[in-house]
Structures are given as structure tokens and as C-alpha cells.
Length: 171
Image (cartoon, rainbow, N blue to C red; front, side, top):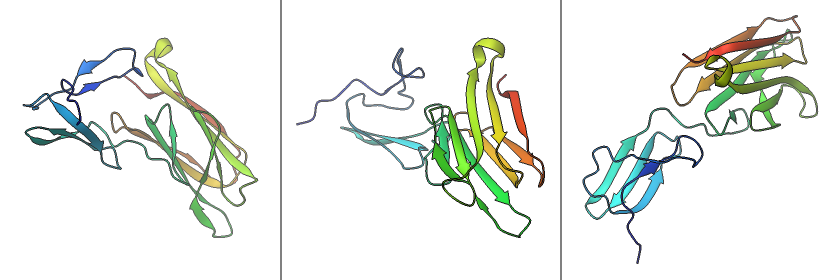
């Protein structure tokens, strides 16, 4: 037999602190929790039924063309286009928890590296950096899954570029 807890608790800092998240919950005896695949809803099973919570943003779910950085807070994807009329989505190559690579034509040939750094202690913002290893046209899309804010970075055909946005997501 399952044992009930005393409500739902969330941690914004990987378990260092916890706070109750019981908005609208009338029965604090929780027997089960589930989240939908998109990370949009949390379902809490209680003795009185199931309560659904809509969460702030859609969680990042990594796949072959989507990278999730900073414990899934940021979703990163890339669309590219070559002069030969080829185009597609960059294929993800995991590097670290805050950086990812993408390949366009061959999995042994990295075309682009993107990283998201927590610069909040310095200027209150999350920082986005990218470095091109190709002069192919591409557009990088970075989404803060917590706030829903999105930044796009465009690199035109023929330009080999790197960029630093030290105020990408912040106050």
C-alpha cells in the first residue's frame, strides 16, 4: 500500500531548498505524481481524485535535433541552408551540460557549437555563446523553458562567425 506525502513540493535549486506547490490542491495526501511528455502538466493523484497543474513553460525534451542545456532550462535547435539548395535541421552532439554541438552534413564533422552560461552573478542574465566551424547559413533558436522567452541568432551564407550575447535572458 502506498504512503501519502503532505502535498507537492518543488525545488528551484536542485534540492537545496524546497517550497510547497499546492495551489488548488484540497487533499494533501499525494499517492502518485506524473508529468506529461512535454513537461507542461504535473498530475497529482490523491484520495480525492487527480489534480492537474499547468507548469510555467514546456520542459525541454532532447531529441536528435534538440539540445537541452542547463538541466533542461534552455532548448536549443538549429536550421541550416547550403548554397546547393540543401537544407535541414542541425543534428545534436552532446558536449557538456551547458554546451552542445551540431552537425549538418556528416556526424563526424561538427559545424557549430552553442553554450548557455549562467551569468546572473555578474549581470543578472543568462549568456548565449556560439562558435561557427562552417560558413553555411544557419539560424540558432534558444528558448528559456522557464519563461518562454526565445532568442534567435542568424548567420548568413559565407560568413564564418562567433558571437556572445551576455544579456540574452535576464532582467
